[in-house]
Image (cartoon, rainbow over all chains, first blue to last red; front, side, top):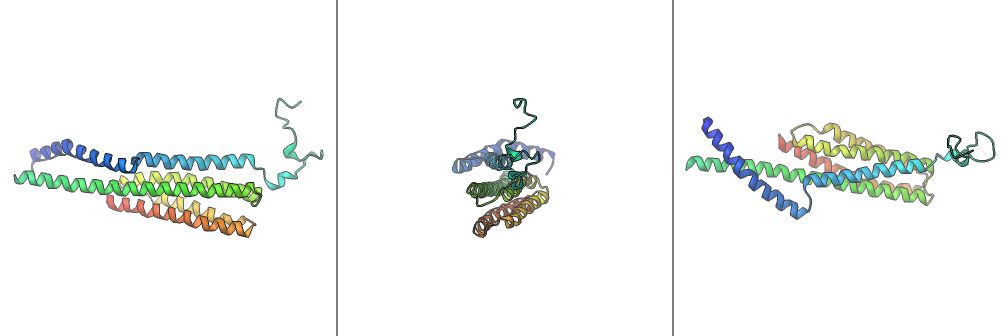
Length: 90
Length: 146
């Protein structure tokens, strides 16, 4: 195959393959409803939701020993003490 | 005429290889999606058990940390799939996903309630099967691209 043949082959593939390829990909996408990229994006969204939910649970859940910890011995567990760094606390 | 036939044959071969690769990649992406859905469902079961006070705060915190790590490694499976499609090696991503899920399954031992521990372990076997299916399909994409 000489250079002219290679150019012809590339031209042929450039003109024909994308049309056929796109048609079949479109057909597959319509059957499945989503493209490969959309499926991947959907998975990422679900994984992100797991990560966000986990972080939220960690934020809202104190360790078990924090329930009874009373470092300033004021009779009130630390987790119920007003936050001294909170400007709204006098 | 012979030249046109050769061109058509070459096109068919290239098209077949491309479509076979696309099909494998789609199946792998769908398997990753199923793994994400199963991990998400398992996390919700654990959270409900904590809300019902069957799982303590410490147990819950440890398990949620493991869920986060498993989901972070799960996200990298998509990167592994892209690497496989490009002829690269997705081993690092596949290993990370396996290791973090195994760690999560091992961490279920912290649950003091035997019934809930066994229930979640059974559920995680399904999650593990979903991951193994995704890994097998990603490896098939890698094999097909070589």
